Image (cartoon, rainbow, N blue to C red; front, side):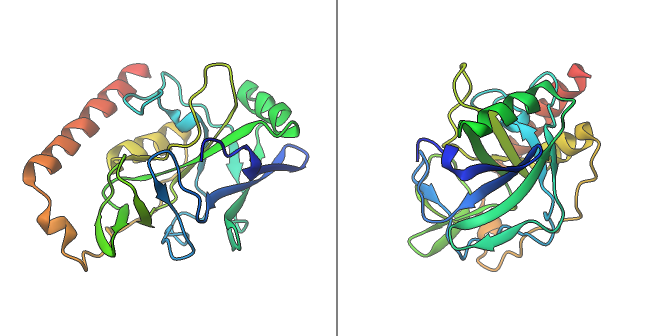
Length: 220
């Protein structure tokens, strides 16, 4: 899946219908969603709508200023034959939202979903493991915490990559946007996955979260 421009339609005045979680289509990492993927839709019924994930290309650092392009409409997250759809109402006062609306009319808006790393899971040969980017497999659990939109071209990132960030980082992004973060418990460890993770990997994830939070605080 090199593009997802087909996944967005302008359906009203500054309103978009977005196929945010498409079923059965592999991304550039060889990963895909299906009808059994748990997106924790009850907790994340109105995921944060931002411009290009609020992070720089490669997800190594946060953008200097998070751009919230609009709001997802409560009650519009629905599971359909081709995937999970949601409606996004763009903010007319935001320049990026204006560019998105123009691009949407031409079918040139990209979409990508964001999640929380320690809650996400991959299914590799019927074995559930913690989420790893660049590892092919079915996405078994993907808490749908954030949806990103951006226009194609102009040096923007490619849309065929999903992003999973640490919980403290996602909470900070919500806080920066002025939106309450849902109360979310850890996914039950029925497969003994978390207990098998090496301590070094956990510590590395915590350190990465700290560094990203420091960058966020310096940008304020």
